[in-house]
Image (cartoon, rainbow, N blue to C red; front, side, top):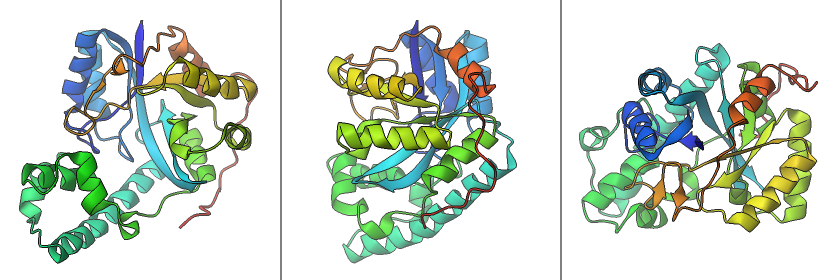
Length: 297
């Protein structure tokens, strides 16, 4: 069974609706799918209804940005989170507010470079509550200011001031666990760490309540996947995988279920049961204590 536990919709920075993403997964033969929008759970009901109609196994999820770690950025996937959890909803609302404030700043930065984009024009592409840099990138490409999304980010959208505050790793893990979810490290390569440093970090995060690592990813070959899986298994973390699909205009070549050029091959039919057991606390690992405070502004 093909499994993809990391896809995005236009409720955050993806290209397609939740229903369309599920339909695309079904057409590709994905049997178990997780929708994991950035700091948003608005599309989960629509996606779950589509999955039920099409007979696709569904895992409600979220992806939380936990800020800089080493030379990279840590993202934490949360599986089976309670989409009505008050603390998680407050966090999503706060991140949406921060993005709104950043939106005005980006308009100003672009004006300084002679590029005028109206708010009305930008928001025609926004379906959810979140206005992301991806939405700006789409307009910049459409108007001929950039060759593609990567070019738009490199030239216009990567200034340090455009980054926004994140939660600490401790807080991100705690929020997911307290919402009844399973906390998993996303795409560990994005941390840009040596094997030894990643091994050390995984051990420390496991002590905070991390429960899995995304060892299968859209761009990982067998050797890379094996290295990450060895770290995960050493620290008792579940081995998961996903494509990080956003849509062909946002992340070209990344396909649901199979990643880039078919590199993703995650077919663990027992992963759904594994995540369900972890969700219920099976294995003796207790949830982290409530009250973690952010350590990163």
